[in-house]
Length: 153
Image 1 (cartoon, rainbow, N blue to C red):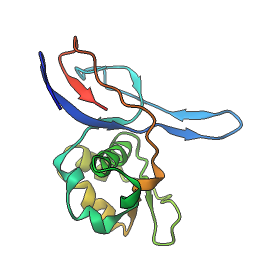
Image 2: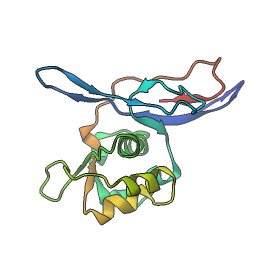
Image 3: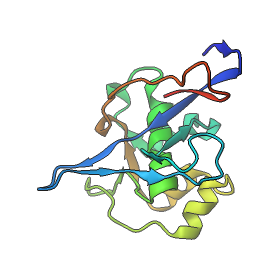
Image 4: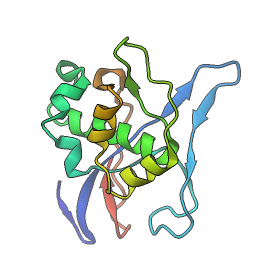
């Protein structure tokens, strides 16, 4: 990461959730209008990477480590966490190998989003595993230099 005139370019991740249905579907969320970065905009779920996204305990709670590059695991975990926080979609697999279809409790999501509850604890409590290899890199976006907050997504 490099320093911009407006500060550090922060690592971030975004997830594009697409459904191959008769009417092709794309999941987007509307950002709160008071947020200083893209307030009120329709966006893909995503946000900056957190220290917990690189927690060594993820080794036991995620699969697909060999399929991702050195920078990939923490950013993929960040993308999955952000999809959970912002849209209530938990991209994880049950012990059977099937994708998790349970509902995210609003209070638990809020606690994760507000850093009152580590995402890793939620995944562990539910007995799930993140499938890092299930995500495919689509593009890399860096916020333009003229913006006061910059992200490397």
